[in-house]
Image 1 (tube, one colour):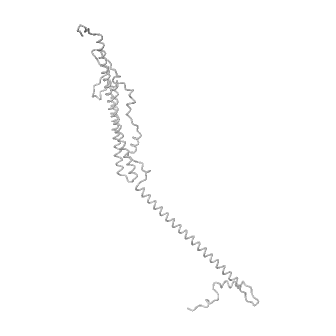
Image 2: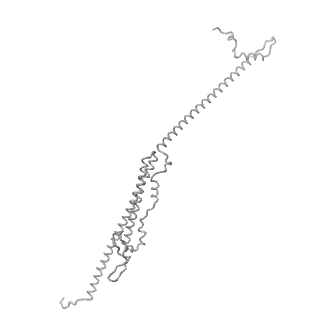
Image 3: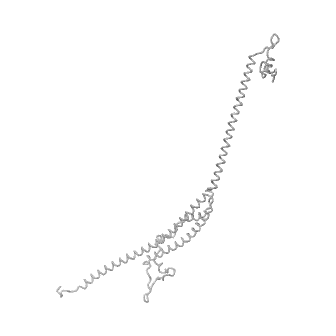
Length: 288
């Protein structure tokens, strides 16, 4: 392709307007031709070049800032994605393990708490010993098993009242056995209630859908089973108290019998000594 004559200009095309403006602004020589200020033109070129460089640098700086902002926004989106992932994981955890605070309706829990707060009752025979006078044995029949001894007895035409004080040990044993039977009846009723709660808790445990629910129900179930064992121990304590009371009475009877035997032996020896002194035999005629 043949070059256009325009491209053979002695200076760049971009400087043409500047040259024309410079020519218009330049002073005219005596010959009538304009005087061209080369230094001024060079200065303008440098100034325009500097401006262009500054503009390029400014745009480059803006592009750098934009790239940084884009990078920051990208990182922010990544963090948001990570947060969403963590939220999904937490939702999955709560779905599988459950929220412990939200699980409040537990079968057997109220019954268990009531039993734990309940004081041990019916084992206070030691505190009531002063109230037992012995006369309780006079009308006692053991629900029709025994014949009451009565408050008095007759010898011939005479009637004699019984001494209640002498029946106090047996009366205490009677009260201790009655305490054991009352405790046994109470424990059976409480055991039946606890066993029903164990069954309800076990049923709820079978249908538990979260790990938290399973753990809580398991804790309640263990508590109920432990309370059943505690109730059995209360019955054992009452039974042991009755056995020990009977042993104590038997020990006291043996002690009293031994004391009476010792007193009778001493009375017999003293009586023989007095009889020997009173009725001394004269054995002088026998040549002893």
